[in-house]
Every structure is written in C-alpha cells, then in structure tokens.
Amino acid sequence: MPEPTPDTRLIAFVTLGERLASLRLCDATALAAVRGSLERYGQLTALTLFVETDQLEILDGFKRVRAARALGWTTLLARIDDVDAIEAKLRVAALHDRRGLELNLGGPSLVIITGKDKPFLTTLSEADYAEVRQLGSEYRARKPRSVLA
Image (tube, rainbow, N blue to C red; front, side, top):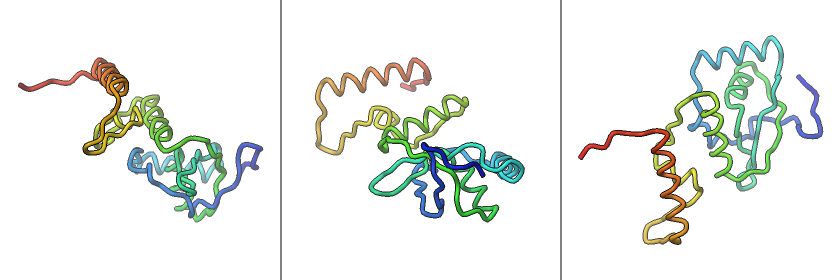
C-alpha cells in the first residue's frame, strides 16, 4: 500500500458513509477487475471523501472499498476534499459524464444541478427561476426528448 502524503491519510473504511453509492454504477465485472488490481498492485489511487454533518462520506472509490472489504482489508488511503453534498453530487455526475455513462438520479436533475430546492409553498426569486430555466434549456439541448401531446 502506498504511504500517506501531505494530501492523503489512511482511513478505516468501515466508518465511511456511502450516501452517494446509489448514484454510482457498480457491476460485478468492474468490481472483479478492481479486486484483481488491488490483489496484484495494491491501492494505486486514493479514495476521495468529503465531510457531511461530521461524517466522512465516499465521493469516489466505492468499488475500491467493496473490493478491499472482500479482500479482508481494513484501511485504505484517502484524501478529503473540501466540498459540500451538492458539489459532491455534481462531481459524481461529472465522473459519469467523463466516462460516457448515463446517470439516473431518480428525480428532477435540475434541483441537484443547481443546488436549489423548492419545498412546498416556498418561492425562489425570479433570478433563481430564470437560472433554473436556462439550465433546463441547456440540458434539453444536449439530451432532447420526445414530447407526447
């Protein structure tokens, strides 16, 4: 296992939260490949974590954690990024985008993309609505969908 650097440290991954795991894709073939890599070469890339309400959460490295767990490991090298939950979700989306994967967030993507929330009977400013509408237009231009009348 690589030695910790000023930017990384060894983390007991049993304590890590996996709130973003549902946003990541993890098929058996990819997991087996990561496990094989860990067995042959050790950990080559640090996990990326962030802090959410005093809990370390995994941002990137879910397959490494699962593979390490299967190998009986207890610690992995990790770095902690200074991002909030919304930025972390955006980074997950960017990871999928870079790899050409479709990300199904299971709900209105614009709320996650903008980081804005509109609970029942709450209003956003006109500027916020305009920003959300603009993002929606950009999204539909990239991923057009049929509209049934």
